[in-house]
Length: 393
Image 1 (cartoon, rainbow, N blue to C red):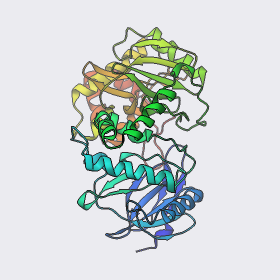
Image 2: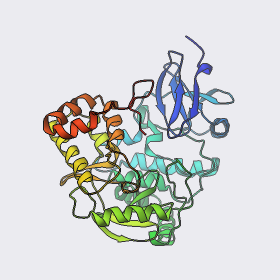
Image 3: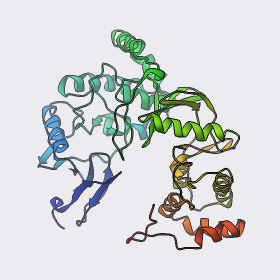
Image 4: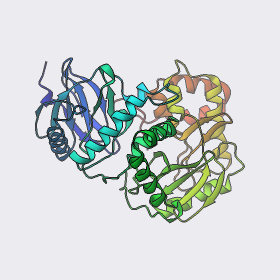
């Protein structure tokens, strides 16, 4: 078996590019690096940026006296060898809970206070906490030293809110630590910013938008043009980095508001759109749980794509991550460039379906349902990369 130092991790345009000539299995990756299992009790995190490797190693060593910190066995210019946990994350552990246990709340409060004292940042998420034996918690991912040290664990609360556990958590904080609870409530009152006044300056070309504000609204997700926050049960807001993108999307949404897959718009501004909140998974997540592509899904996708064509869309595509599965049917988000960029075939959808191994089924069903559309899509060969994947032009 080759040494793990022969593994390379570099930044791609959107995702990490990983070259692994070893037999060590990849067990996780994120924005900063990739993690490989070395043994039953060790793993190595290899970073694209050596600066993050240095910061993580320093944070782990500085907090080695804390019970929730992983052990560090070795570190180098672009890696850290640390303790491996064969255990569920706290997000997985709480998945089917209707309330959060008091024992967990006490430990989270302790972790939050100690992290604020021992490191330069105070943010951690449920997926970065492992629940080991005897309900002990272990926290990973300590390289984000540039994040603001908020007096409230905003990311943790957003995670809990998404799982409908935020109220349960705060009720117990109020009971266990009334002073902490009052401090947090004061912070929320002072920082409950009106999204209409926020100017987004974070984010670079080709990168997902990041809003550097202590937003107390529930974070839903982000993409290249904007970030989504839930404002109420039935409304969410998309805040854009570039006002021109907000203008483009507003034009598409308002001129096509009669189409069944278009989200309802309540209000627009120079850099935001207030629209209906769409509860439900995106289609990519939904299809991960399916063993086959049903004809019903193909018909729904085909209806969206052909309706786009009839409605004057120049860019014909419907990426799986942009389709939300709701009780009222499929809704499509991210309409920035359909009137600006020309594309006659849904190449990103093809690429997504190829990833799920559903592309052949989809095209066969389209051929049966709508032969004319199938003929247009396949009149010229679908472009491929050297590795056989669909080339997104």
